[in-house]
Length: 83
Image (tube, rainbow, N blue to C red; front, side, top):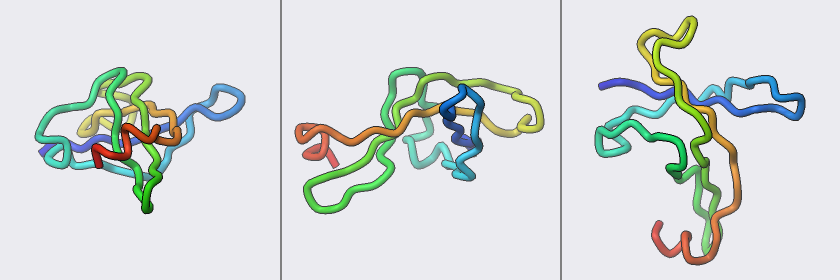
């Protein structure tokens, strides 16, 4: 099954490797696309989401990966109820 590697944009716009891979079987076999949300963590009644900003195929050095550029944000209360 393909793997997605997560990156984030730093303060100066440079890409930072989050050193986090997601097996796409964890996403029902579907590759997340721009605008999709990935649950990063949940603790009690709060949580963190990664919102997909961009995705790239065959990125340099990652031919076997889909590269997802994500932005981390806190989940809203109505979103926490989903997970």
